[in-house]
Length: 438
Image (tube, rainbow, N blue to C red; front, side):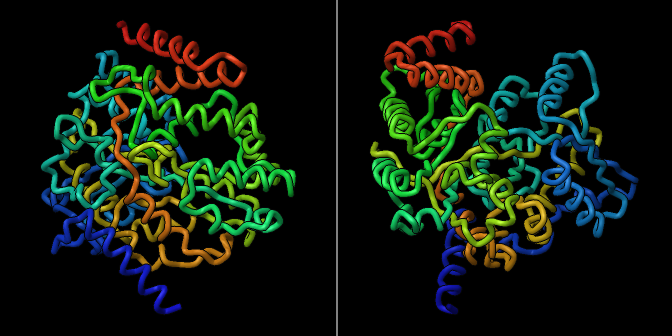
């Protein structure tokens, strides 16, 4: 057991070393303040917009408490604001219709490129702020980097995982190892056996949702917009394989479609299905069924057959940005660098109660991440997911990411209903090009 723990620790150290370039300043100290906030003794209140009281609001409150230990003159005021409202208020502000932005906002990763490219003057350039961006998973920092400038500090980890009900797999003669490092073809073959012997589909998915398709695309380092941000639907071989795989999942019964998010959650918690495949934030949903403690396991996702395919991807996640019109932007940058970009203590504190998993790689060396989780049969899942995060292929989402995703969602609905692939994809690309004014 000690040898196993040692090997895991060494593995995490190697992963961190890989992404940090083995810097002598390893950032594993409790805080990594750049002292900009301590240059003034004036009382400063940093206002922050974020949206989940038990998750990102809690994390920001905790960060404020940690920073205040060394900077008692700095107070953090969290204003709970729904993500859609943040986007609306941001658009209103940057078009000159208001001047009400806070010092810091939290932004969905899917919207980072769109907002930074469309409103380059709205956000403070953090490139030379002292924040050690090389100590985060590279795919996360890439999302907030435009023209070589870093505009965002990564927050939560959206590394993709598959959660399985191990008791159901065992009824079909499988263990979770049988679903680790496999292909989608193997997943479907084994899923048919599970369905036949237990009556349980392996997965559910909201009808018309592109989330699972996008997860598959990124696992191969591919996307539906090209490097110039233009639609890349037609002749996209990875997209064709992704949609063919999804259709086979649905037609075989290995995946069952549901109507909305509530039904999706219910299908997991009520054992309608034997698994869930999402960003690691799905752990909060899975563990909400306390009576199922000890029955679940976590492993990576299946991979496609195309070149560049991997068993790793990402879904969701968010990042912090400093607003350029902030009167306290230097203090705000120092605060983010010293906490979300420099404090292992922060991530140790928020992990147990919120499940907020970092992409700040030194946090993976914390004892909190190595703690076995009883709900998942004593597995050290947070170490496992930190390793997954370091292997996620990097893609460029592009400015019209949301519109492209919606177009793919419409296309998959038509294809599942019987429309042929080429017709549905051609219509989807035309619709997106129309929205882009092309």
